[in-house]
Length: 276
Image (cartoon, rainbow, N blue to C red):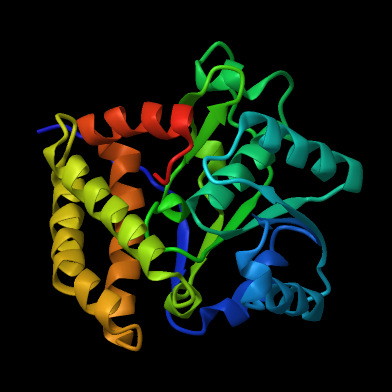
């Protein structure tokens, strides 16, 4: 049996670990581009909280809040231009999978010449990117645990992934308490996405012992507690379980990949802009 498992990401997991964001970030620089969505992190107060935590560690920040669901390659390029103009030395993504993927892509574009589509299709390659820190607010994509950034080309609706170790986050701060403001319909969608990641990684032709073990564990966590959390938003242990399972889902697809379900979904959300 031969296999290779490589995933250099620092996962900081637990209720309340959001408070460590400043100490984590100061390892990588003193000025961050904070990438987020247009509304949710502002409404919940999480964005302001993180900016305050960063200030306490003497880290200044610039906010980029233009990321759309199913993020566009052009949006990532726009964020990268702000990184360069503002001399940011790290990128912090705060939000769901779309925000995290855009943050990774922006950190990559800021260090590399040309259009990101050239790297997505392997016409160019690079292992350079600014340090990325991710703070997920949805338990679904698992982007905090891998080196993928899924983007849509607005010219043709083509939805593809940038994949490289350079965009594996330096640290991911995974706080189940940050998930609890999700509307139920979002929880249902992202929870099912996490389940699919783990099932697809387990059934993948390039699965291996480490991904099998992790996938099976995560599938059980989701099957045991997703419906429980949906019905009872105060169920703390359930939030821990499905949040952990989501991160594991991101980790296993980094190595084992996804299969037909995601292969069918990407054209749908790329062309029709529906919820992944």
